[in-house]
Length: 288
Image (tube, rainbow, N blue to C red; front, side, top):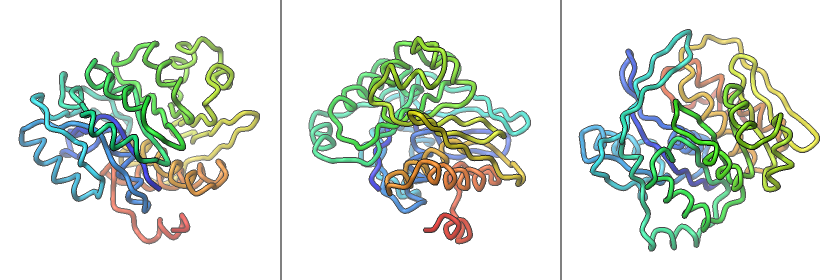
């Protein structure tokens, strides 16, 4: 599998320390953990957090050749956990608000083909990164365009949600984001999105402890959560996204993809890191 992720790279900072994250990076990192290839388009600052992030990226095995340096500070998110559920406070502006690609880089990317192109709303909160993303989406070739709504605070608009939906073949959101998305689209329920956006083929809905669902035209697949100890949910939804995309790229049925993705998410919530190393037990369970 070959994936291209666009968006924020940031440090998640909590009472237990800091870990490198950001939804696009988390998805890319988990795709690499599963055995795929992933590249990320983003930006880091010329500061100590940026230098540390660049070193951590090398360790993850994610291609960071299109991660540029910005005059803005490297992004970070202060995380507050309540019953294992995170809330966030971001620095603004951050380097990931200043993502850019040269014409030569756009030409090179447009000559490639990806199994999945991953993008979301958060990195579009400022004009420069937003403009870069939609220039990229208009030129890139991908089997699937994966839109992770990823609504945080007030960093989104209805127009932005609609623009992301217009290009998406797979939409991922959680149950809190669902009403915001259907309102922006002008329909009453998730199923109505298929009628408005003809490119859309799958909708992944995560529902916390209730599990997750994958909606397709005329059918739905569901998967529950494991009953193990929850350490942190940071990155869990991203790991589910990555595993779903990875197994989807192998041509597996959506129900199987969702089941395997849920296994990965259960593994992640039992650990502190957003992109932990995978052990042999998990890999065998996934058939890898």
